[in-house]
Length: 308
Image (cartoon, rainbow, N blue to C red; front, side, top):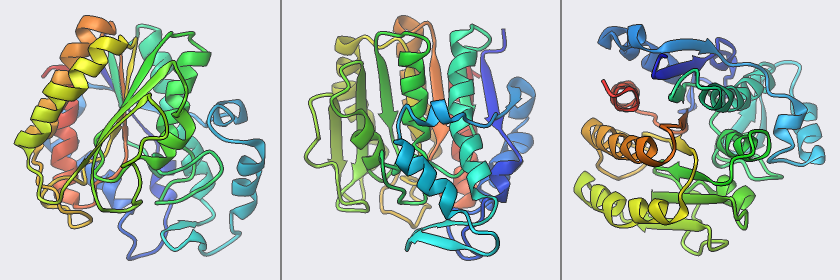
């Protein structure tokens, strides 16, 4: 059994919100190039992301919202849903691939084909609320994956871990009050989307952190808060919102993590999953906009997932 799969799709390169937009196709190219340069591509099982079904999307979104997203696709050019979030003619297919990647990843892990999966897909998802696109996000890929594990595979409990530098407001909006799910996150505060300081329900464990926070503080948070909470919750799968924009090179925020911090966080989560979740981890790309740092951080993350 290959320990780790790597899911992506060429359609995810086609989504384009404009030449100067930070959430660009170059992000996936940077990841691909670093995977090849490191030789890591030889050690993972490459899988193409399928198209998410409407049934998949309805796990996290309403019929009306899904219809609105389909209706918003332009015939040509770019149309904005908000100042940060825009669609081109290829956006819908990319978003459906991104959501489908999470569903496929859960199926692979639950089928025993692999122990863990990293999904290098875009657009990202953790800002997408049940009925609102925002923050570069259209469908909430991670929430869909977690709910697919709960509903389709009948898991009793799933934990979502979000280490993007921005609060995953959409994931919280969708999963708050869902007793079978727990969400653990840290994020820089104050920073877009200016939420998360008052959790929406008891199953949300949010930790706002100030600008300049370094890896030692994040490692202490994982040891002192995340792992004890996971021990109490006893999830059967971990689903990770893997944003790499807390890296010190990323000018979209002001935290100060490095690749070694992402590797350490991932290794500790992998150790927990090996002990309590049969190794089951699904990780999905969120933010990360400094291209070199993004590629290097993803390689560190995937190496740790695979135990390399």
